[in-house]
Amino acid sequence: MREDEAELGQPEMRWYVLKVQSNRERTIRDSLLRRIKRDHLDEYFGEIIIPTEKVVETKSGKKRVREQRLYPGYVMVQMILNDESWYLVRDTSGVGDFTGAAGKPIPMKDEEIERMLGQEETKEEEPAKVKINLAEGDTVKINEGTFESFEGSVEAIDDTSGKISVLIEIFGRPTPVELEHWQVEKI
Image (cartoon, rainbow, N blue to C red; front, side, top):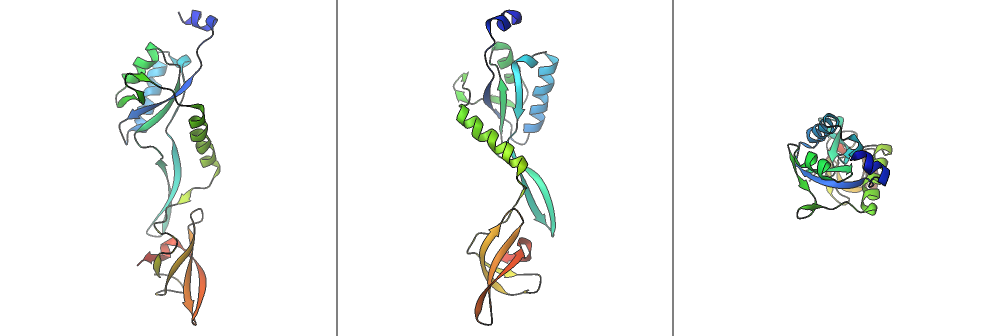
């Protein structure tokens, strides 16, 4: 039957979204890849992606880069939907269901795929973003450095470098000071 499909022109691969158990996306992805290889269904499957972004967190003054899932509990699968591929995916432990209408998986629209995959490509090129729990206009107290114990308001935040600009008052004049985000605390 597979030879006949090849002669007739195989249906094109489409992207589908799977609902999976949260915090198990990676193991479910690995399990799917193993089962595809074991059952020799490689021709029906393309990429299996867990959309993520890199985030920099600072704990105790140390920077740490980690990957954060953009859509926890979801995995994107590029596949040709037929009875064999559908059964393999549905029968994998941890997979809930395809997103879409009840009973019948609906492929994602091309615009949605381009937007999501475009995000993936730009995420790899962009530096990781620093997780900063402050917003512009917040009042903060400086805990470390030359201006320790000064209070001011956050004027600007640069989440790629982790630096913030704080407006403090020196000699009765507002003066912007650039600091690392971990040198201040929100009041």
